[in-house]
Amino acid sequence: MAVSDWTTIIGLEVHAEMLTASKMFSNCPVVDSVTAAPNSAVDPLSLGMPGTLPVINMKAMEYGMMVALALNCEIPPFNQFARKNYFYPDLPKGYQISQYDHPLAIKGYIDIELEDGSTKRINVTRAHMEEDTGKLTHAGLSSLVDYNRAGVPLLEIVSEPEIRSSYEAEAYARKLRSILQFLGVNHGDMSKGVLRFEANVSVMHKDDTEFRQRTEIKNLNSIRIMVRAIDVEVQRQIKLWESGEAVKPATLGWDESAANITIQRYKERPDEYRYFPEPDLPILEVSREWVAEVRAKLPELPDAKKQRFVEQLGLPEYDAGVLVAEKAIADYFETILASAENIQAKTVSNWVTGDLFGLLNAEKVEREAIGETNISAENFAKMIVLVDKGTVNAGTVRKKILPIMWETGKDAAQIVETEGLAQISDANLIGDTVQAAIDENPDIVQRYLDGNEKVINAIFGKAMGKLRGKGDPAVVRQALQEKLNALK
Image 1 (spheres, rainbow, N blue to C red):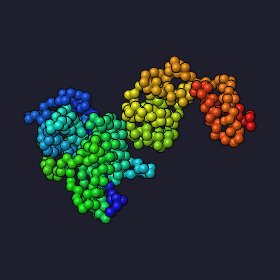
Image 2: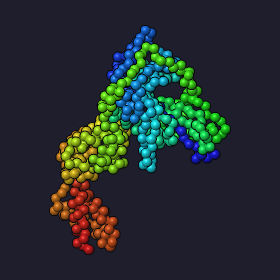
Image 3: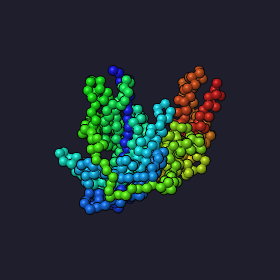
Image 4: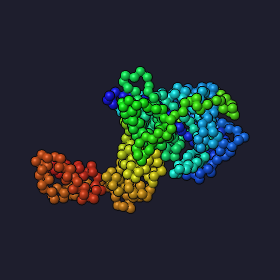
């Protein structure tokens, strides 16, 4: 059988911590699980001490509702928490307070853009609130547990198995991550575990009439890793089926160093969790008035911002999509526009997505950290204005000014002055320099006069070199063209 005979079937489960000050069921503070000292933000409830009683964090519920509304979900009026029973060291109570039969939200969707530019709708089955577990660190034959994360509000978002490739999975993940960031309920830093993806993967042969057995890849801590893990697992499953073996339901892990899938354990069935209503928490009635209040708090979301960038600012669809992919980038872009008058949106987009992204890539800085670099949006705006006014040329900015701004955070105008980088626009000086370049390169000039017009760029480069790159390119090119035309 050929690989083309198989279709990839993917459903994603996304776990997003809510950015609340306290945990889901107690007033214990939420801390950074990476930088905080282990077990420094715990209380009797998050440690599973007997005799403790949970209290619902209503801010976490509101944040969860904001996400649900942004995902076009229905929010049922009847909400109920349940106990999910299982026994691992990172779950001190021996059960997790979650939701099962009566989740926070149901029947939503996310629209993603495909490679050909078309749009595909991925339906969201449900979104439910729960508490996070602790964090295990394995050291040789031992395991260390940090309960700082135990009890942190967690929203689980479950898609329908309608994703058909790792590309679609990536598009879905990035769109969802962007929505969470725009809402301000999750900062999207997957390296710190505040956002985690789990991919349910199976394959379906062209002759099949129903889905085959799936596996679940757990705790993928970057979108790039998720894509790689899905591709490897799809190939593994096809190979098993084609060799006559069966795929067993299992929880899988991803070994980044080996770039391979590892089987962690064979999967439990839902009834093995022994769900039952949480006896220590009341039923939560979500009034339609409360839903309306939360809806009124929703900020401008990525799709709406993209549409505004296209319709009001005249940006191409592609540019707008890149700029709204991360909230930090969109904020940076809009701050630049607000910091300078008569600056063109397309010009700003070109500088940000071209030159600044290039610097971020070279320095291995993630794009969501764009606002944390030495180049503030306000200073970047001043730099663009200097180019627009002809004070300095773009080439000088790219080669000299931007690197200095990146290292020092200095004002662009200050760098131009102290480094003597102001652009030369004096027509007489440029004319004399261009004439010298013509006189010193008779062979190139003759080739131009013989019809090889492309060599004008070589003479242009010679003239710019004499001006140490500071000549106004438009003035230099005009003077060169006029002088060469006079020789014809």
